[in-house]
Length: 346
Image 1: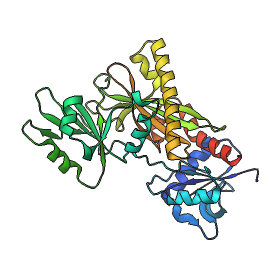
Image 2: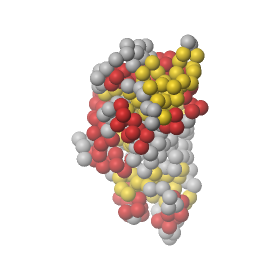
Image 3: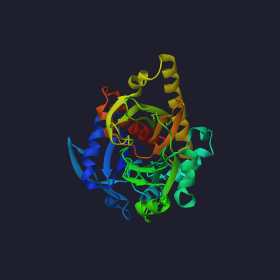
């Protein structure tokens, strides 16, 4: 084996290769050679890749042999390319082979694990009466099976006077369903038939100055192949918004949570966040196959209990640039390279 193992990053579009390479190259300090390529860049018959790599200090497109390890950054439900790569490279040599998570599948995985008490009750939209669930929970979230950045996530709330408010991103209702109107008909028309949705029990979050927040924990594998937490951050939504993916500010959880908790309580919560996130990563990997990173989104309910809202297979990394400390940035980009290097040596 060469002293410098070839590590590939699989991306969706050619025009993103350079940007992604620069980030991962800047933050790792390992003896490896890094290239980026798209599914269209693979020449299967010759087992070569037309990829972008660093040559004499410049990013240059060249022909490369297949890498030892591939880090899948192509965010796509179609996994055929990754599966074919793994057949050539060997088992588990292509990590994050599934990074477009199905929320319904993952709910069922977590609900059957030791994390079940942390997961809100969830149902298939086409198998329940939303009006009946509202009577029980008062607040619901309707989400697509596959989704990111809070897109098409609707908040459905039964108000004290009996009307139902349906909101998107903002707390202000987009649609008001009166007592005498048919809620299911309105929702069916709103959601359409193309996407599949789940209905999640709404958790009453603890707002800060009328602003909702969640806690995103980034879990990644390290140089010895073990799950570890790289970042705990709080995303604070804009005032009168519930969608924390469109956040006004981002804080290190260790700086933000003291606004709510005494030091002893805060340390317990930070410890619990780490433990639950690593357990969730193990459970997801058991179901999904080879993973190297994911993020876990938590909220604190009215009783300060941590609840897992969802897992993300391709966490947004640009959001961490707003944190004061650059230690997060270094970790989130260096750890996938550490894990790739670990895999190349095993």
